[in-house]
Amino acid sequence: MNDEIVQNEFGKRIAECRREQRLTQEELANRVGITPQALSQYERGLRYPDVSILKSLCGLLNTSADYILGIEDKKITESNNPRIQNEIWWNLRNSLNPLVIAFGNDIVPVFIDEQYVETISELRLRFSKEGILMPIVRIQDMLNLKPREFMILAYDNILYQEIIPENEEISTENIIQKLEVSVRNHYGEILNVDMIKNLTDNLRINHSALIDGIVPEKISYSLLTSVCKAFVARGNTLKYFPRIIEFVEEFLRSGQHKTDAEITEYVVKQIENRKNLWFWLHEHDNR
Image (cartoon, rainbow, N blue to C red; front, top):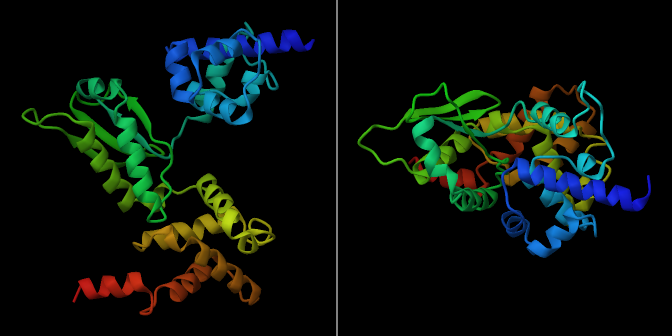
């Protein structure tokens, strides 16, 4: 297959996925941060986007770069229909989400205009200042819920549930406030290995000596996830993530018997002390 055919197929797949998401070229271009003319060139097979734009396109179109680029096109349907195959793989990849807002029919209209996206982004920014990485929030209407009912879910586990009274206005602001409380109260249930890896990769930018050759070579992502889950379950935040890595590595170097519980106990003992400002303030507030 020559380059021209490959590029044309690439463009067709972008256009196909865009139409499945019911987006115009202008709407998709605005969300990606490019001009509609540039998107049109991609879809006509006249040029390729750079890597950062391709990543944004895949995220907004709910597809993979492999599918868009034609790298992976596994045949899993009798008709070999690429649209259906892509949808099947997407459904399987996203069968369980770390964070979902699910709601009944009467709540659907307040989420249609997507103004909630900015509110959630502001919440995510506030969380980041506390060391909390909030995963992508999936928005899902659920017909078997009552019309004014909504839930906050983590991997299909109910973190919060409410039926909005008839005399109260339905607003995304109120629902996102409940999302904030749910994330704070159940962060240990939301954390997963991918999030820990993302936190580690980000930390490597400023603290390469802390990470390089240590995570995941000596401290596996699964071990780090286990320790962090237990740490936040005590009401702590991952603001101390660099210290957690440091103390886990310190404990492992000691050569002691090392169960996850023992490692966590050591980390907690090092961080939760009266010299720590956060714990001093917490004790001061309770006096």
